[in-house]
Length: 114
Length: 106
Image (cartoon, rainbow over all chains, first blue to last red; front, side, top):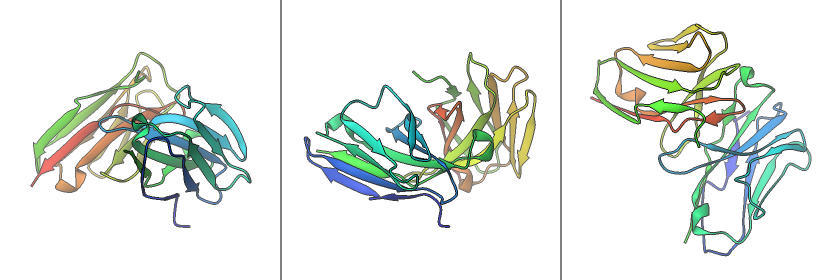
């Protein structure tokens, strides 16, 4: 297993366009998390899935954001009508269970909205 | 609002020196994790601490969880340039602190 994979690594888009990011977790991990990180800050929790169920969403996840994990494997995060304030690193992490088992992060997708 | 407060925000030291970074909160945590993040990459888990007063060592890194499970510290002995990075503490489904940027000069 090559760890958590995120694609694309970088995305530049014009304001108002839609973007979609993909995360492939470690295959035996049943939990998957999305975070957003801006310069000089720690990652901010967006949402998480246990298998295919989306169990929690942060208030940061406005109605322009949607995440799916249709078969309990890979996940997608879509941002509609992007705004300049959406520019950030979007990180995905997966775990086999609780925090005690450790979380593995992907390398992230860097989004720049121009 | 960050649930976890990290200090200092920046730390620059010479190779061979020691350093300590802190993670504090008014909340009690069942566990706390430390990560190191390099530019353009995701955080990498260093350690999880669970028991109040617990001390864990990872080579030159020593992690301590406060007795009341509200705070933690990371101490690096004889820092090396490879220790350079953003050190993050996290708890409760990964509520992260803002991190401490550590730079070790050769």
